[in-house]
Amino acid sequence: MGDLKVSYRYSSLGFNVRVNKNSFVIVYPRQIWSSFPQKIKKEVVENFVFLATQSLPLVLQEERIDYKMSTPLFKSFFISPLLNYLPLAGDMSRKKSFSLIKSLMNTDYCFTSSNSKNSAYELNAKDKAIILFTFGKDSLLNYAVSKEIGLKPIPVYIEEPDIKYIDSKDASIQNMYERVHKQTLIKKFSTKFKTQVHKINNGLGITRYPDFFNVTTPDMGWSSQLTEYALLTMPFNHYYKAKYLVYGNEASCSQEYWNLDGFRVNPVFDQTKQWTLEITKLLRLMTKNVLATSFVEPLHELAIMKILHHRYPQYSEFQMSCFADSNSAKNSRWCHSCSKCARMFVFMKALGIDPKTVSFNKNLFSKASKTNYSIFTSRKKDLKPYDFSGLGRDEQLFAFYLAYKNNSKGYLIDLFKKKYLDEVLDREDEFYKEFFSLHTFDTIPRRIANKLKSVYQEELESL
Image (tube, rainbow, N blue to C red):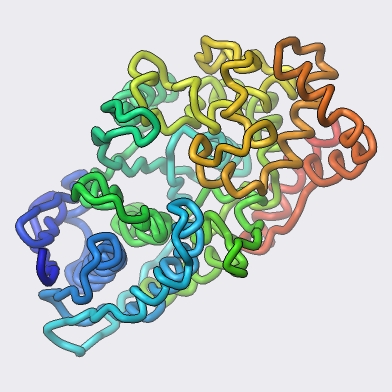
């Protein structure tokens, strides 16, 4: 391909990013974008463009990338999420972590100028919350609890492109359907609650997929997705004078494992509480007042599901936690054939929630679903990155135990009893304490944390 060349230009609805001959459009609601001041707009866009494309030389196996813009202020800061993601990318692609890190270190990032400037912009922010809204359990609970504690939640959905790809398992052509299902959910949610779900169309997101470039290199474009969103949503923070950017980063997002190359790895590094605090530094430097947080930080997934479905059933019915990235998701917002669907299914059964209330239409305790559960398979290619890591093993064991106690039936319940029941009985108290208690509130301002504790403790104490 030769050296990569990246440039951008503004439009009336956002901006276009050009990577060699390919052009990608980022689109905002007109009023949101036009209200965003020029003095901060350039800084936000140039930092975003670099952050969202810095992995391309590694994906395309190029040694140099040329940017037609000044060196972004946070260039050095942005290496952290990519560098911390590379050992996971190596694990997923069965490549040595060292070779990927070597490629990053040997890449030349070139700019037209080294004259980086801070815009000296200051936002007079109020107690309002931009909710990164995906219809996942975390964003729904963030929205619901914000309403209850008196923050004005403003849901913003960042739409990533769907693509076609060839499944490496059977060479079949697969389609993605996430956008289709979420457009339907947005319409229903907006109508039911008479609220606007804003949308940013992130056309550059398609470059996260090596398939887009017809290459088979490791998938590295997801390393900084949540950090990119901090930049993309800033026009909304400005327009609504919103003080908070709320992520759906639960307690398990900060867990780590050791890979075979001896690296301590977090599968979702830019969702950890440590990195969320770093994003707050970025936002404070750019706006003086905006901060990043996660209202679900103290909760594990089982606790989130329990609180959402028990306390806020009007919102829980909209849950979509599947990536809908295969043909089996064409007619349902759950593909019923991935490890994310399997995990949500057993969590619902564990908590006595009928999966049909969120449009599940298959029993995922059948033998056919065995390879979608991390505790039953060693075929890592069938698992999503978090499940692949093995970090969710204990929570999945506990969920199967609770489902078993709720008299759930099926091949996998019987297999669980045979393989793991004795272990869970020995660790039952440990599991209850870990998964149904509150953990850290490090990213949450104390005044808000106290209100959240009251809500969460009321729900968890009722177990």
